[in-house]
Length: 225
Image (cartoon, rainbow, N blue to C red; front, side, top):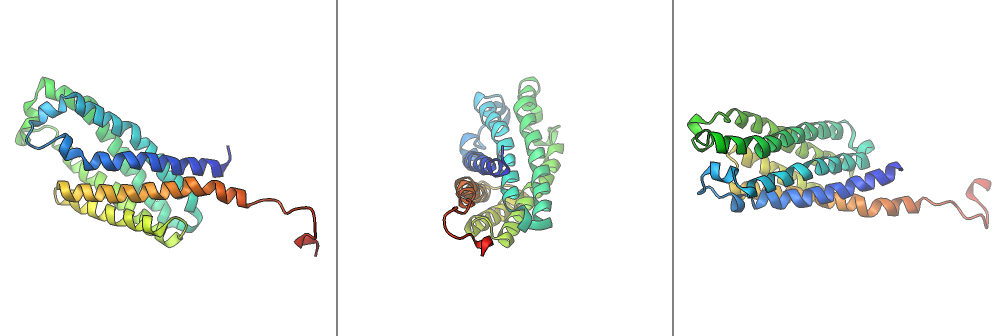
């Protein structure tokens, strides 16, 4: 399989992955409202299905970001590579968190719900620090990725601006306590921007490849003049 085809598939992965992640992040508060006891939420089938969906789409989204970087790697330079590495580490931590929330949290909800329902006794509070680190890596990496994309001028600039604004809003929301409105707005803007980039790569890579065709044999060739 050619590198151009792999990059095009990476664009499709970014489009699909972030088209799912964005709405999931935005509707989180409606699916899991604060007025429901946490241990009941964690033990529900909805909790399992939503987090399982995250587990499926996050690797797809990460592959998509790698494809977007590959499309502009030469012009994105060192900044683009640093951004990709930060996003990669952040997404790996996100995946680990989703895995634990899908598999481990329900066990606590059934065996010892007080650990989840009472923050002052919550043995899972140590994960709060890791969530801050994850947010700084993933969202900070997306900020740098957007800046590198703006400098490279390969992908749509408007899409890069959406990623930049969404990542900044999301990072501020996470550091301030992840308010629903701020977090949802950041997720939607950032995901829309990355999905737009993915669509651009997926839809135009084939056209770019087709534009590189052999000169017709009829008439005088440029190299023979």
